[in-house]
Image 1 (cartoon, chains in turn blue, brown):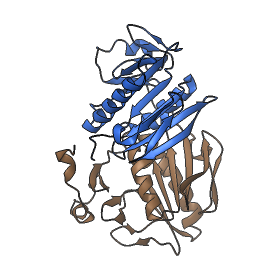
Image 2 (cartoon, rainbow over the protein chains, first blue to last red; image 1 turned 60 degrees about the vertical axis):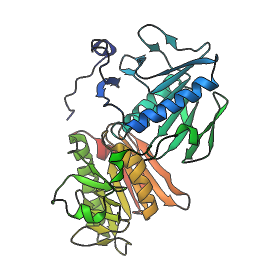
Image 3 (spheres, each protein chain N blue to C red; image 1 turned 90 degrees about the vertical axis):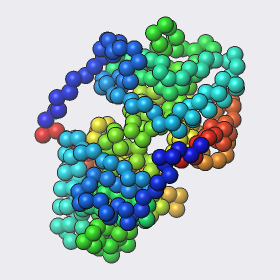
Image 4 (spheres, each protein chain N blue to C red; image 1 turned 45 degrees about the vertical axis):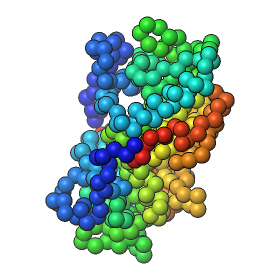
Length: 182
Length: 184
């Protein structure tokens, strides 16, 4: 028995009022509740680091910005980086195509999508590097895309440094998780 | 900055005071609510349970337990795994209140709303407690992963997606994905 399930498309997604807390994930409209404060602290920290380190080398955008990947997938990643001469196109409506870097900060209520479904779609469309930051565990994972598959490049927890091969910068975990004391 | 709400930590003693059937698990000192599972979750759980029951329990090799039964790991962690296997001679002890200590195999079937715990927090604590094998089944992606507890922690030793077979070293058995995800 196949369960009854209505699949949505980008056309449906675009009819939602501005600011609707939904993402279109594999044809499903998935609601994202407001993030926890630690989520916003970590996102703010990463944004500051990337703005500082990437001056003039690319564009750093944080959510909510629509990222259109295909007919069934329109996401609002927590943070994206479009490097100069990016294959992704920025328009007034959002971003079309894969950014070079996507960062997702986990929330317990919807980490499933970041860890599994969105990760697979990002790798398929050629996102070059994917960072997953977990504010509760104070961990940061960096995946690099090798022939359409994400491979763990680095995994650090609580303290230490981690290198982004794509950006050529080193991140200090204490800075990424500054202010977070779960 | 520490948030005020985070400060209260619960213990196994608090957990035991909840009314029977309360849909909560105690995870690292927090009481986490588990909503009722989806039909796909239920169906997957049923199919895995039936297979394990036939292969293990009917063969007299051990007990196969499905949720909700409490698993006491430590003072801050009391879970209700979807399925547990306690083999004869296991480190885990079964009492009328639940299971104490690490079962030989724990199976968690993912739900989008609670996968964070299964994939990260509970996984870490199962590893620490000495669960010998951890199975993660995702009914939406039709994937099946078996992690074996080694000196380096849980290592993915067998996995399949949509079709194919997975192999459990601890239970010495093979499961065919088509029997688990097949639609009736």
